[in-house]
Each structure stands twice: as structure tokens, then as C-alpha cells.
Length: 385
Length: 181
Image (cartoon, rainbow over the protein chains, first blue to last red):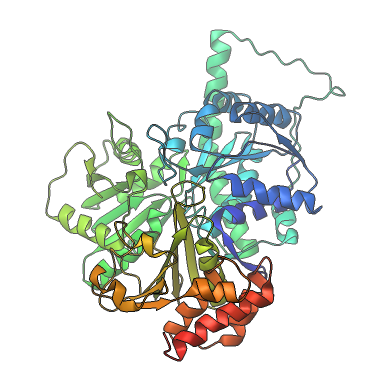
């Protein structure tokens, strides 16, 4: 399926595998799970063909895979792993530990519904349920963005010393094949400096690492993590810009699509963004002043930027392909909190659209916009789709 | 935009058929987006491949609601399932069956075409692998003209029996192109 250029017909998952091949991780502890497995399968094929030389460790569970990833990362080497859904949940304890240990692991997560009941459908609840673990989180719209963002994530994580999770959805992205432009080795070598952390577990370096701390030490450590998260906003913007300078593709940490003169803004994340672009184009053609705000970097949440972008907008409609029983859509909750107390804050309609992978078409989104225009918002998420 | 839904049962090669067609349109310089859905990776359960082809980038990530062409690998999938949900009077429904198209007219208002892909596949020593025959027939029905590229992609994509697959594909293609279905 190779063409003359680096433009290949690839699934979203395989676009990620190519990015991992180019960043050359030293250690990859892995455990398979649908719909993530094709990422690891292609990595092992690259490895077998001698195109990658890092160590692949096949673990007995996702919990062990993350434990191994943390330990490997603390020796000062580059580490990658990937998971999905139940596997991510099994890692939960270790996710907190990775962030606390300031281990800059990069992990790819493919969003899939959580049991029970059992399913294989796109739904972002698995990764959004990890939002308080201290991991950087990026949500991607298509295979190209997943490829490029994986490159960026190593750059940001290793500079900040926090782990980063890059995310796309099952099937609509993970198993969708489309043209993807693969970065060249020269580009990636120029983009990504060698990982050389100041502290590492190394018998040649005499250091004492205490792991039991006083209350104040714990608090200060958490505060440092918070400060590091704050720095991610600028570092991620710069990492995106510098990749754009090299490969000609950039995304920002969020994107405003056709927001000029908009009175109504749709806000969403991941694959829904692509569908919403078509809806926005059709609505604009009808004369409806609507735009789209795509949130790409969800952790840290770009609060200041979002307040600036949405100030003075009459209405915002949030589309959540996730559901937290008892609070509703998670992006809706985050956005409301971000806009608290803002002068000229918009009315916010929170719609649960596409939960469990239910189908949302551009027509569905247009219908939601039309109904939201004529309604007063309520203070909770509303089921659509 | 061209939109196809290809459905078969796990193990019949419906997913590969979608990829093969996507690869061919991709090599022609078209924008393509193809994805497969399945309930669980096991033989016998319905497997669908959804393919969009366009001259501009394809951004929407949702089901194909009204396909131009439906390719059905197994007629038992037509009744009781959702395969025909989006069929309109303009939709071509290509069915792998030895029966005449009229045998399926009670299922709705669409352009039914039957091709006995099972017999064609067997004639070319392909056993029950009907996907290349049906790909050829589907492309013939939409008036696809780049036969050389079709032969090349089928030949390169076939994991085994490359020449037999190309021959079966071209027989499917010619059968519908000559209107002998």
C-alpha cells in the first residue's frame, strides 16, 4: 500500500505505530486489548523486521504493563505503551503513581465503552475518568492528528516530566483507513531531542530517593505537579508550532473553526469534531452564524483561552460522547467551571450525543443547533442521539 | 461523494473487500475513508465495511445513512437486519445469490442485482472466498472504468491465488458490465 511519497493509506491505529517507530522508545511494556491491539501488532512487526530496536515486554496485565513502564521510565529511558477501555481502568492505580513519580511515559488510549454491559464502541468515558490522575491528555480527530500528536506528546512529556496520554476513538478513528502523511526520520530526529533526565535510577549515580514523605513534603510535591501542568499549556503550543514548522501540519491545543462573527459555538472533542465541521459548513450556508471550538488538549484544560474565545458569545452547545452518571457530560462540566464568573459568559447547552458510540451525523448536529437556538438552557446535560 | 456498505459474515472477506476498494480509489488520488464494524471478532457474525470516496477530504465520522451501493455477501443478512435500512429507490443492492433479482423485490424499493459469486469463486478455485468477485461486480455496476488499476490492486492485495482472484474479479466486473445478470 506504499506510494511514492510518505503518504500511506493507514488506519488511525497504524498511524500511531508509525509515529512510535520514528520516536524510537527504549522500552515498550504492552498488553493487548480491542480496539488498541493493531497499534502493538504493527510495532512488533517493525521490531521483527529490525526497523525498531527498543525492548518490547509482553506483560501479564495492563496493571503490570504500567508498573513496568514507570520503572523503565525512571531509569531515564523513553517509554511507550498503549491500551483501551477496561485495560486503562486496570492501570488506574499506576496512572496516579506514574504522574507522582514524574515519569514521562507516553501512552496511546483508544476510547471504547466500559463494561458492564460489554461493548466495543467509541465512547470517551474511559480516558475522561482518568482526568484527575496527573496525565496530560490530548484528544485526536483523525489518524493524521494521532500520528502528529504522538510525536508532540513525547516532546512535551519529556520536557515537563509528566506522563502524556494521546487518545482517539474506537472504529471511527482507530479502524478507519485514510491517507496519512508519515513524518520522515530526519524530521523526527530534528524535532525530538534525546531524553536525558537530570535524575535517574542508575547504579553508577549515587542518589537517595525517599518515597515516604511528611504532609508538607507531599503537599509541595503535588503543588510542583500542578505548576508543571500549568507550564504544559505553553510548552504544548510551542511543540505544536515547531512540528508545524518541520512537517507543515499543526493543530494548536484547541482550534476555532469558522468562529468569525459567530454567535453560537459548538464545542466538542475527538472524532465528533469532523462531523461538526460539516454541520457548521451547512449551517453557515443557511446563514446561521455558528462556529466550532475543538478542545484538543483536555489536561491541562485551557481555561484562560476558553474564557477569552467564548466571552461575548450568546450560546455554546457542548457535545459529549461520554457520560458520568450523576453529573452528565464531562466536557460540559469542565466548560461550565472554566467560564464561571466570566463577564458576558454564554448560555451553555450540554448535550449527551453519541454516548456508547450511537451514530451522530451532521444532520443530527444541525437539528441540535436549531433546537438550542430556540430554547433556554437547563442546568444539566440533556440526552440527544 | 460515493458511499458503499459491504456486509458479510465474519471470515467471508467483507472487511478486506472494503480495504481493497479504498486502496484502489486512494491510488487514483481520491480521498477515501473506510472502516469496519463488528460485534466481536468471531466467524459467522455480521461484519460491515463502510467506504466513502470523494474529491475532497472526508471529515465526517458517522455511519453511512444512505449508501449508493450495498454489497451483500450472504442473502440471509437481508432479512431482519439493518443492512437495507438506508436503501432508497436509487440504491444498488448487489446480492451474492444464484436466484434472480426479482426474488428479493419484496424486501423493498431498491435496484436489486444478483451475482452468483459463489459459483464464480468455485470455478476459479477460490472455495467460498467471494469477495474479489463481488468487488468486481460492484465496480462494474457503478461504471468504474480503470480496469488496469483494479487488476493491479486485486493482484497485490490477494494473500494467495493472486491470478485466480484477479480472474474472478474480472468475471464479476464483466458480467454486470455486459448486463448478463
